[in-house]
Every structure is written in C-alpha cells, then in structure tokens.
Length: 248
Ligand code: DC
Image (cartoon, rainbow, N blue to C red):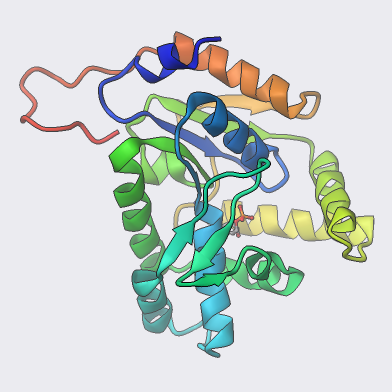
C-alpha cells in the first residue's frame, strides 16, 4: 500500500489517535504504523511514567499536586527515533527507557495519571509536539481529550486474559519473575483505575473506530488500520473559519 497516499490525504498534519487499555496491542501497532506511514510516534504513557520517576526519585509525595505539575511542566523529555521497533526515552541526558517500566513505577503511575494538574501540562506538551509534523499518538485520552478533532481515531481492546498473558510474556522475556494470576489481577486493577478516574478516563471517543485485537496479529491490526484510514475522509475546515491551521 503506498504510504504517501495516506499521508497526503490532508494538508494539515496527520494525527492518528490510538487509545485503549494496556496490553491491547496499541503500542506495538502504533509503532508499526508510524514506521509504515513515516510519521512520528508519540508514547504519551511514557510521559506520565517519566513524571512518576522524577517524583519517586525526588521523594515528592504523590498528593502534592503542585509539585507534580511543576515536574510535568519542566520535564526535559526526549524521545529517540524508533530502532528495531523500540523507542528510547531520555530525561535530559539520562536514558530512562528501562527505569520508567519497572513494576514499582508501574504500580505508582496512576497518581500522576489521575492528577488534573499533571494532565493539563502533559496534554499541552503532547499538542505542541504533535502539531508540528503530526504523528501516531498512543495513550488513553488522545481521541477524547488531546486531539478530539482528528478524524483518525482508533480504540484497541482485547480480552483481559489475553492482555494479561501478553504482559506476563513481556515480563518473562525481560527476565522478570512473574505469576500469571497476579499479572491478571493487576491488569484488572489498572483497567478499573484508568476507566473510572474522574479526569480523562479511558473510553473510546464517540467517533472512534473500535478494534478487537484478540484474534489479530500486530501486522494484521496495522493493515486493518491503514485500510480504514484510506476510507476516512478528513474534515475540511468551514469556509467561514478564521485563517490558519485547523488544529486536528
Ligand atoms: O500506556 P502506559 O501503560 O505506559 O501508561 C502508563 C500510565 O499512564 C497508565 O496508568 C495509563 C496512563 N496514561 C494516561 O492516563 N493517559 C495517557 N494518554 C497515557 C497513559
């Protein structure tokens, strides 16, 4: 499939919103799509994780909204180019790719994710970064909050047992001792927290396309999304709209 025909459908930067719960395959699919479409890839979960890492290391109490928000506002975050389907993350000069994915950090990231002040800062950052060249942006609220106007919204989901199995296999592959039933329980807790929090809960945007990836491989999911993108007509800005770029 010619990737250029996908990218030139719209004169505005192309924003592909990829939301869904952990283990739904959205991260790997988003990276795969970004490579195919030659678009930047943005992992917004890594941002909430980085705020959490700094807070933990600086012993900032998770209840201190002001300090958490300041960390988010001042975060010198850098993302490396995709290599072998993976992406490196730096805070300043420090490579934090592994540090932001430890089980301890994962258990604490919901504090930053449920803080309205942190979300405000990170949503601004996500908009600033993606409005330059567009991108495949993955998270929980990309279609509902960050880029609600993009016509390219996908919400990936899969059976919770399969998502837990994927996570369990990832942990084993990373050399982390894991127990499947514990991973499943943890997965259910995270799903509940993400979807019931007051601010920007995990849910599909009204006009998102829902994909169940339980029976799909990553390349098959990416193929499906590419086909769907071709069928989505980008909305034209209204004639009376003020000059300037339409935000996606
Ligand atoms: O996708 P992930 O597991 O790396 O996300 C880490 C945490 O951040 C998880 O609790 C969900 C939350 N998150 C969020 O609330 N909004 C986003 N746009 C991305 C992640």
